Amino acid sequence: MASGTNENSLERSMGPLGAISTVVAGTLGAGLFVTLGTASSTTGPSVILVVVLSGILAMAIAVNYSWMATIFPGAAGSYTYISRTFGTRLPGFVVTWSKWLGYMAADAVLAIGFGSYLQVFYPSVDPKLAGVALLTVLFVVNLVGVKQYSMSQNAIFGVLIAAILVLVIPGTANVQPGNYTPFFTGGFDGFLAAAVPLFYAYIGIAVAGQMGAEVRNPSRNLPLAMVGGTALLIALYVWTAVVIYGVVADYRVLADSARPLATAAEAFLGDSATAVVAFGGLLATASSVHAVMAAGIKMPYSWAWDEVFPRQFVAVSDRFGTPHWSLVTLYVVASALTFWSSGLSQALAIATFSYLIAYFTVSVTVGYIYFRRLDVSERAAFDLGRWLLLSVVVASLGSFTLLTQAYKGSLSVYLPWLAVGLVVFGVYWYRGQQKGTDVDAILETLPGVPSEDYDPDVGGCAARVTTE
Image (cartoon, rainbow, N blue to C red):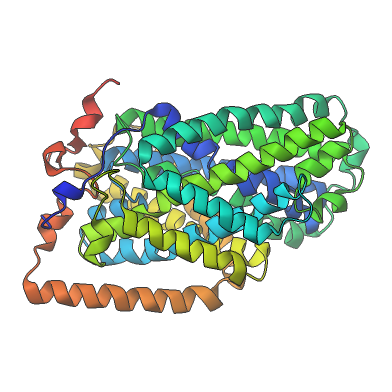
């Protein structure tokens, strides 16, 4: 085992509600309050159908991730699943190096979205400056530890759901069926083009897996968070999409709005209700930034745990138990990206592309385990039989299809970033070879999990058999 990792392990202090609010409140931000309107620019009200189909894909991915999370309940999700399955660090690093970029881009996008909703109350506010201010506040909250993160995220979750219901319950009674026509405005190409930004609405479904080393009883709580949370997201998205396109006479009004839910509320609600929805947008984008920040710091932490990244990134604060160097890096880069990005669409494309790479690779890994690694599949906390293969096929084909669309606006940034990552990995791999690092011993551990709590021969953490 890598020296010094036990004292840098993480504490399992997040309960089921914290894990669920990480998935739901951490996903609702840009998905519900921004892209649910802007994505209609290419396809019109048929966005509703895109939401349904994207939800099916999201559920398949959630099933795959939750199954893997019960086998490898450590930090960094995708990295841990891939590296521990194949017994090598490079594939997992390549996949999550791009995903790290996605997390930082996502935080920038969400922070800008927060600033856009803040303009409802303060029109003169610069969305980018407001976004950086939000990143700064949540940086401090995440710095003081996962318990404080969970408490604040749970509180936001409750208020956020109430704000959404203020729109959709009365909105349901004000739907005009004629507003859904024409339903398809851009043909098949326009419909498919809307799928990439709309899938971003579900982009955080696996975010709880990044925090697998901090969730209590992961064999129960991680599947509950990812699968249960995704089901709740699908219901909220479909209901909201039906309402906003049913109450607004011209979908182009929503397509051109930076805060489409507030725009929809203006069509049939008074100013006070519109303000409540706008406040919900503030909470949703803030909670998404919060969750992405908490999850995104686990990847460099895990690379450092496995000795393919600077050792400073595996260090945790003596006072708060937080991987502070990883957190500082994400905060600085995300803040810079709020000013660098040429717009929401480019940042969304970069983030979605990197997430889709991880979702596709993990889904293929699940299929590999199912057919070739019975010794690993037996460790899973639940057995879906051949239904698991269905989720593998749906997730793999769906993710790959969306990748063929998402790459178009991403490669100019992704390829140079990947080249940098390969150089970083190569340097630390070579250093490890020179000093005789025992890679097999490293891969017998789980990032963030103390060695006494994990035994790969029996496939579990001590926390798996507890009954919190």
